[in-house]
Amino acid sequence: MSERAIRVGTWNVGRLVSTGVGAEDSDPDRSARRIGDALRRSAADLVALQEVESPTLGIGEATGEAERIADLAGLGHTLLWGVSPSHRTAGQALGLTILSRYPLTQAQGIVLPNPMLSSPQPSGEVWRSHDKGLLLATASTPLGDVTFACLHGLPFHRFGRARDEPAFLPIWRTLSSHLQRLARVRPTIVCGDFNAQSLDTLLPDIVANGIFHWIMFDRTRPNGARSDHVLATYGWRVIRASSEPGPFDHYLCMATLTLGPEAP
Image 1 (cartoon, rainbow, N blue to C red):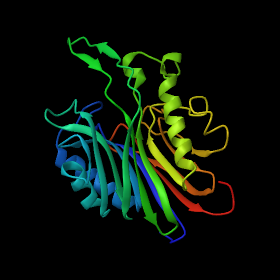
Image 2: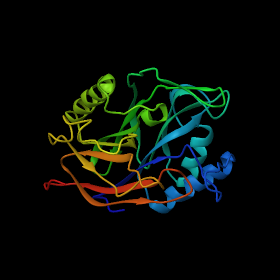
Image 3: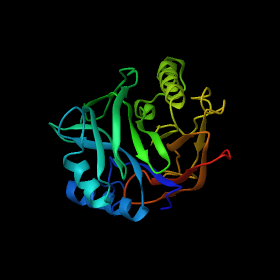
Image 4: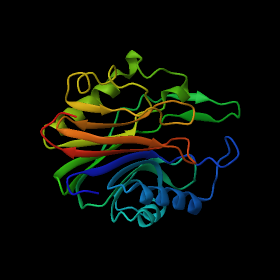
């Protein structure tokens, strides 16, 4: 990678799909190898991962699954935020990870409003909405200090709800307020699974008003949906952006960016 560009990405790695359609692979070591190998091949410099398991709640350096992925990817600077209890593994937390080729400082986790949704399942289990949020840090890149953020939004569809319902406006307004604040400090990149196809109506203050450039991908899921996005403050220029199908129910989405006088 040129010193005048950085390669960033986002990937929700919560569900590894095997060769059987809809089947989940429960081997965490195999999962970590697939993720780490794919990130190494992608030549990523900064990556946001969602739905990574953590031994504990809270923010710290990557351990467990996230540490294995970072080692395999060759990304030596890490942050892991266990946001809420894991629905996959008892005694584990589930959360957000930033993997970086560059030193990371000023780590912060921002919890978005939780509407406390619930959805009874045929099995008798009741799904409940967990906390979602934004993990951010300052990355010391060859282009200068950059705020890099990993985001995971609430999956409203799993509860039979629409993300643009008036009841959920506080979530989007809170996110918009935080992103506007970050944009005033330094160049900022936000990567994540927004669980939303379109951002211009949900985040009009930052997308439609030109604070952030919305880097769109053709599709980011095997079913053709586009729920994973990259936002970059205007001043970043997009060299290339693409999504790569793989063994997960989200694609690895990568963008090569540089800072320059031209608008993206």
